[in-house]
Length: 387
Image 1 (cartoon, rainbow, N blue to C red):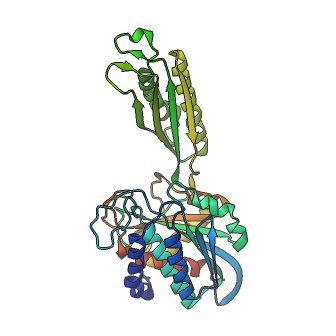
Image 2: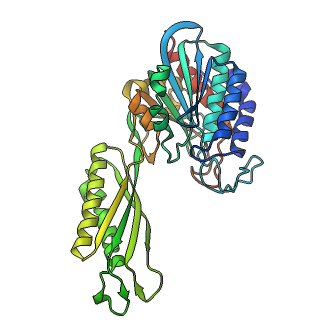
Image 3: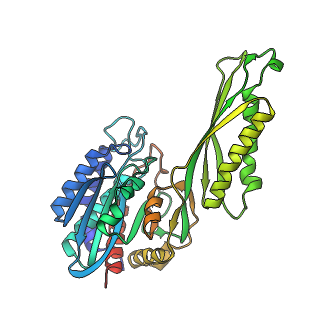
């Protein structure tokens, strides 16, 4: 079955919504403008209930089907943008300096609004669909904030589904896998405290730059020698700051980086080894290393049965050959993981065609993906709430 005719007919209208959201981005929880736009559209569609302010600035809307049924499934879209300056030059480019939708959350929100309009018109299902518009996916744990606000229990959500666009994947394709599909994106900072002095007398110092370099090299052993090669982990050093001039050995140095893992045991091991390596190397060289390790969100784990349901819905739209059910996991992170810890569900990728990469200032969501995304959401609801 191809995309829904109604979804194709709505594409120009939904594209206009998407471009309006793109022009007016907000960061983290500061998405009041987008949330208000979402609320206004939902009211115009005639949904049954709208609740705002969940997880600070999130929105949840309920649509009840024609038939009786007590089952409730949740569909989630993220609303926040990134702190980047856009370089696309598009007519609908961001109007706010240093803020842009460089991850396609404008498209995600617009597609879920399109599905909301269709479902409110047709109501060809039994039970209830909860439409979840989430703030602060980009590092703010907005999904966790909504869960902690009691969203799942308040609306009786039994299953929850998410979708994200993927540049480089062809339009009209989807990708999913059971188990870990997105990594746990942790970050760390190591502060090395040594003893500074004149660069001509290094023997009188405890040089934090030299010790920091040893720590950087030591951390590479975590993936190379500590982790099971069949269980992926990435340890990347992304910052090294020390010193102020050419003839002074500084008192301190700072190293920072990220750890990406798809397994909680590997995650625990990586954190422990970072502390051991940094503190051990520093102590052996008359320095002190202080490690600050922050866990952002868990591994995004797709539940087996719900993954099958999601794949079937996608196949109903684009055909079996256009749905990859064993896609390689990504080492990027996604706070939808918190919702999947609270309820069974699945997270699927939708093709965005040949566009710039995510988190790139030249990125723009491909409006040609909209009809596929709307059709997927509708088909998923109608299949999961058929009885």
